[in-house]
Length: 128
Image (tube, rainbow, N blue to C red):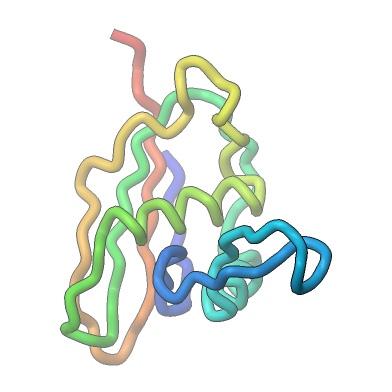
C-alpha cells in the first residue's frame, strides 16, 4: 500500500474548460482544461511518488475542500488519475488490458475550511 497527501486544494479538470484552436483562429478546435487545473497539475508534482505502478489497483482519495459547495466526485477522481499518470505514480493504462485503476472504493469529499488537500491510498487488487 502506498499512502501520500497532495497538499494543495483539489481542482476538477472539467470545470471551466476552454475551447482553443490548433493553428490560430481558423484551425481545428479542441477542448483544453482550465488554466486553474493546469496550475494544479504542475503544483502537485512534488507530492506524487514516482512509482510506475502497472498492476491493478484501488485508489482511495479523500478530497478536503475549503468550501461546502457541491463538488462532482467523479470529476475530481478523473483529475487525480490524470495527475498520477502524468507524474509517473501510475503508468498510462489506456492501452492496458486489464486496466490499472480498477476502482476508487472509499473515495469521498469532505469539508475542511483550512486545509484543502487530497489524501491518497493506492492498494494492489489481487486477481480473484
